[in-house]
Amino acid sequence: MKALVVYYSRGGTTRKMGEIIAEQITASGIETKCCAVDEISPKELLDYDGIIVGSPTYYGTMAAEIKKMLDESVSFHSKLDGKVGAAFSSSANIAGGNETTIMSLLQAMLIHGMIVQGDAQGDHYGPVAINKVDDKCREKCLRFASRFADLLKKVQA
Image 1: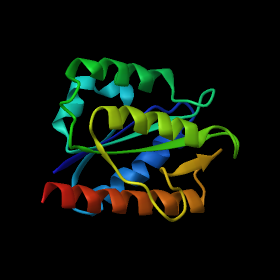
Image 2 (image 1 turned 90 degrees about the horizontal axis):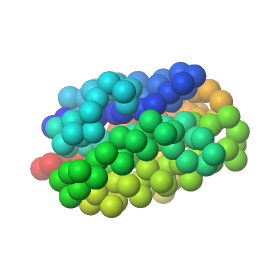
Image 3 (image 1 turned 120 degrees about the horizontal axis):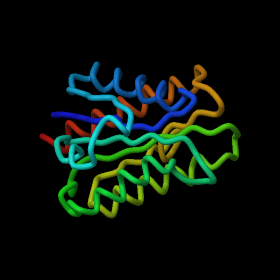
Image 4 (image 1 turned 135 degrees about the vertical axis):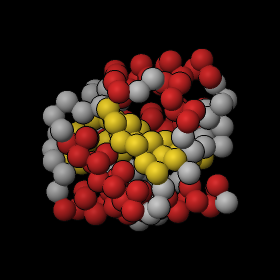
């Protein structure tokens, strides 16, 4: 099993979240790559069983760099079908658009036929950071990663 955590981060918050998530997935026994979006090609998404995408919030949606990767993934539409997907986000304010950003990422995953799991506790759609990675955000990232790893193992069984 292989998982990918791909993100765009200008200020470092989204990157830090991605690193926490990737470390926890790795600790769950799954080979995990964590990288910035400009370090992979969209076609490389096909190499992973689980894909997590992280983006800061810009005008209530994902960063252009992440959108570009997803737009280019259209060339292999349906080949991500059945893979596990998830998303996370960061913004400067509590009502800064984190949920709309995560939902736009999840919509793209669902269109690809990916399996997405919500969380009845806490950050329902995926973890968010407000201005920085604090203790609460770190805790949510760890829970998110553990649940993602558990789901990936179930799907791959």
